[in-house]
Length: 435
Image (cartoon, rainbow, N blue to C red; front, top):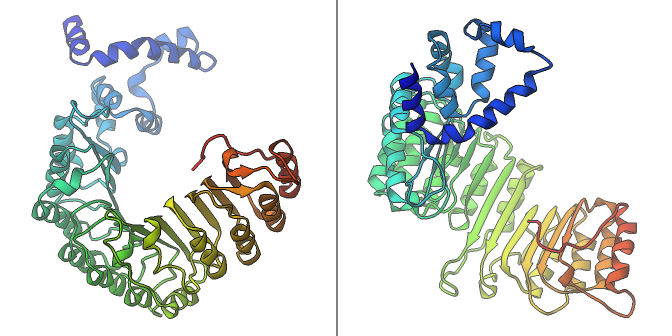
């Protein structure tokens, strides 16, 4: 027995470093179990529901070690409830700080618990080998009944370097065999239109959330197929190039449930080389008429000269995030044409004060409750006027101290008390961005 214990320590040295911490944790049970009680307690006969609760809180490695204590604990280790939710971590030790799920454990899960898995995610690093390993596991889930699937890349390129045929084949296995998928998050992957058709053919009655930004092999026709047939779809995230008038009208049809959340990423990698199409006002109006409470979130990563197609007409966007510099003219259009706006974050603008633009937004965007400004400029007087017009409905106000320009009316020492008065709570400018 002693030899076995030593062998365990040699194989998993990390457990040795945590041994002292684990011993210290036992002291928290002092008020519940006396020392004599702890010595006489038969841990193997603990009630089933208590053992299950303990195992649910244990990290995977500790859970695996606990399963070797006795036969009863090993039986608990394989209870289906413990394997309904699982995250595969697949990394290369030379390139990642994450600890990869042990291959032997992966095979055991596939062999004994594939039909128990319901909430599954794959977290991979930037290496192609890790993404390919994830595809290999997906290909083996032929007896699964997965409800949610997430493919998470902690860094690019990951899945994008995998052969498209290999990836699509692996994903199709899950789409065909699950038949009850409700949530799918597959950003930055080579998923294609034929894969989406398989998804629709097998899960059209259950799919509620589809998140697939940065999937270059999906066309507008592919996502339109999803919208046409998945009538229960409530949340959708995609790139702007897939967005179309036809898609919005499909989401607005009588047979479709009310959409709750639409996220659109507007991204340009090559400045000046991309011309963005315009969505008609009638299409936006149809969506809002059908789903009046829908949140429309847009993330912009464009260069200033690429904004021409946006906000020329009224647009029902509710949340706007600008990751690069945006012009005064663009912010002026937002004030004029985004009456449903709830949140606005501008990471950069330039060296021209935005007083008039902010005041216009305060006047016309009556639902605005959150504002963030980064590398911009606004006079102290203009900023206070903006806050005064918005009043207490501004629940989040994140403004860098460098944004505020002192003027004849206010300086930086006065502004926090004046703004606090109009907000109805204590407020100070930020020293660094909070978004």
